[in-house]
Image 1 (spheres, rainbow, N blue to C red):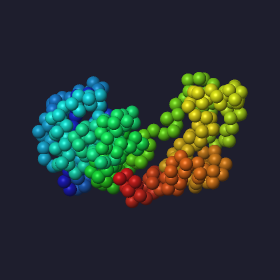
Image 2: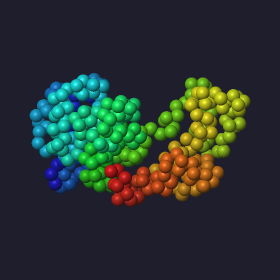
Image 3: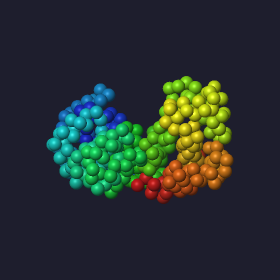
Length: 338
């Protein structure tokens, strides 16, 4: 088979991992593929060739933009702190637009989606970028349907990812589309990734979003909640852990965390349930018990309100692996990535 051509556009102060993460995935795929399976021919191009400085100070060797002419299988546009200057470079934006017309698919990492939108490529399409810049992207490009939730979005030939590490997840999905889910999983294992995340997963979980409070007694209670989610966790017990009265605890907790203790506990229970549904084959009843829901019916209602899917639907959409690491259903895993 012919090698698939990957062209990566780089510019001054590009994010190093936005470039190196996807390239490592493609390169690892090359090392695991046999010659008859084909692989990826990776090229970095830049108007500042031969050397381009990243935000981290590392230098990337690149070829002149002219070498990027001709048919392209995957055009990759990364983000970085140099994005503002790159957006003002009309020659660069024009080249990206023209190259997209010669590409079978076009992918971006983090702020690279801004360059795609600036080139007029995302009008009417669904796209994402780093969560911190989604509002700015929606304001600047009102014709783009910006979705701040997923780690990457695939709309037609365009794939946009949320940023930094999610470029790796996106590239694994590209490899999966080319060579199948089982091979993409092999690449993920070789890269020692915990599991291969799929595009519909949120950019950050409730646990990450719910930062620990500055107030030590409240933070102590939060840490205890995380370690004891399978317990009933009433406000009285939590207040005792914080050495506070229940009324004062509830008041200070809401002021520090931004939600009530009860709502906070439910958020963390749902976050744990999602993780168990994604990574285990536990029956729904056991998932409910491990997350502290006293009855399956209570779990089903809470999960449906929070996620908009039943636990079974969520597992069908996002689980690809059994606990042993064996692919449960390659067809389902492949479909969920696109």
